Amino acid sequence: MKLPASATTWLPPTSYSGGPIGDVAYSYVFTGGDYKMSQINGPIYITGPTRIYVTDKINLTGNNDQIRIASTNKASLLLYMGGATASIAGQGVVNESGVAINFQYLGLPSNTSTSFGANTAFVGCVYCPSAAFSLGGGGNNTFDFVGASVSYTVKMNGHFNFHYDESLLQTGPGRGYIVTSWREL
Image (cartoon, rainbow, N blue to C red; front, side):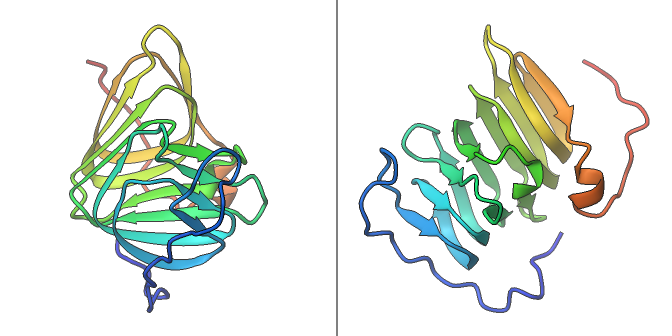
């Protein structure tokens, strides 16, 4: 996994200075384009086709700091992670469309640890082939993971329904390895 050659100019984001959207005062509102950030740790709203390259870290607790992808048919996010660790908890990523391809987490070779602590459903694609992927949460409740995941290792802790989104066969990224067996621990 490499950064796309087509993204020749990654722009620094401009802070959003408008009023709250819904009840959230977003730090950034992206209507589309390519952006480069050192870290994500505040609320972001996506309303158009957006690519974000993060060079250092992602730390979203899911309370007031989350990525929300609008339900419009043009809103999507390709999130390239160049830092070593990413931590997304709670409702850290809300994909309002319910379409998995509209949120893609793409871990670059330097991304070695990615964790999602869910207390709600997750809809998206996680591709981090060099990372230990941890999916935790669920407690006494069962939550859905809808989409696809590729990682170096995976550890799931909690109660999850893991659903592969079959529409990714037509709309998703190129097809690579196919799981033929696994060992449950």
